[in-house]
Length: 625
Image 1 (cartoon, helix red, strand yellow):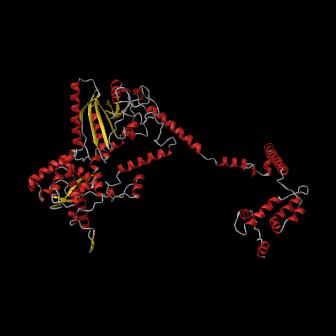
Image 2 (cartoon, helix red, strand yellow):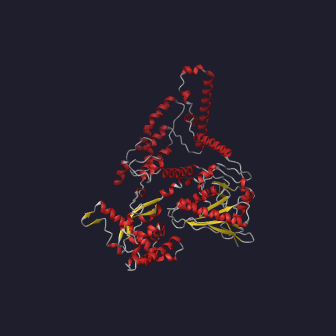
Image 3 (tube, helix red, strand yellow):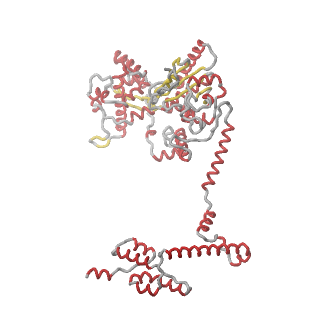
């Protein structure tokens, strides 16, 4: 079975289980793709490897890697010879981007070098540029399509897979680059998004460090001075502690490597990730540290600020020292190179005794021995976050290296803008945004895509204008439509005076004729409905005098308010008889009576009509009898 670029394929071509990288791990491959003899190719790869290590040493000499450092070895696989490296960056995403920065620098130094880098999420450079990648380049087919060459991000087009949307293997990608190096796609927009985080390097290397004064045993201070990077595996041991590793500390064993004796105060260098990990942990002091660390509040009352600061340094030192104690118990069993180097150094110190330990005078001469950086960057509140999103300048009295630095502001604004774009994109689904900027297939040509991007921007502008028109609101048109639906004449015609009507007799006459025809249609429709209701017995139009005899006191009350209207209508038209549906009134009154004076539908309905019925006092007296 052959392993091809993270996937396993059997000899018959069928797909087997895919091989995936562990979490928090980045893998990189460096190819020299030029016509060289095998021996010359190995020589060139070795030159690249040495240059890479020198570049890493010069750029990140004082950098502390979270777990693994940048490393390269020559590898032969599936007929390919290349440099391969894999780094476990743990919780420090900055380690991954520092590696990308180094690899990009290498491709500028060696023009024939092609680099592919990916992690557990796949082509994470394309994930960074998901906002502008071509629409055909989906996560299902992007494997082995993103390459760094001469400092630029190059994309292998769809033609490498014969126009079929499928992933390509590492061998197919290398072969296509050899045969068609000019056919790869280079988009400045995709490159800018993918390499956005690299803009802050190499300055971010120093900005990601944090120095803090802590009070630790002299032996541990010497080890940290000789091997500062050992702080990373020690804090990881503390951060991932379990009851087994804590057992020596909790039992106050006498064979501890770093007992809290002969304490000195020195400045220790952390990365901000490591410092946050150890600072944020709640950890009860082991018995051997219990008598040294005093509580913040004692029986005498609040302590001074100086004592509070001293207590904080001791507490942080207790956590760091406990981490080194746990690391010493398992360093020989770990695969971490830094842990093994720490174990060797500790063994040498314990063999030589206290003679190798530095004196107080020697410690004072150490560089940055009293450096204590501000910890304000750990404290973030809602107001600060809002200021960062708005890009507001911080108070001049505040530290510039805290939460309000310009790079953090830019990152936060970029995150929020992308999230808003996603929410405003109607084509976005649960898998992400489906954008149409650069939705073209540049498979067979390596021409610049600037013209295509300009066309896409024009299309976006046009679609944006159409969208604005679609949601625009014309108040006058809405008012005119509502009047037409209600059978009312337009407002401008109502405001016209009689003189204006005479000024334009043809138009106004047509309008009046239309209104008369409309009224005639309504009268005909009403007459037809009345005839149908009469035929079905829904309306019982009895004579008024006869109905009046049948109505009681309540019926008279109901009809009392209507009587005036009936009399007026009788005066206006003696030919038309205005009748009231007796059955409707009777049912309404019976419903009201059944409420027994309580709230109910009949009472509510009559109340909405402005009528209030009297209580049925006769019925109540009969009930009492």
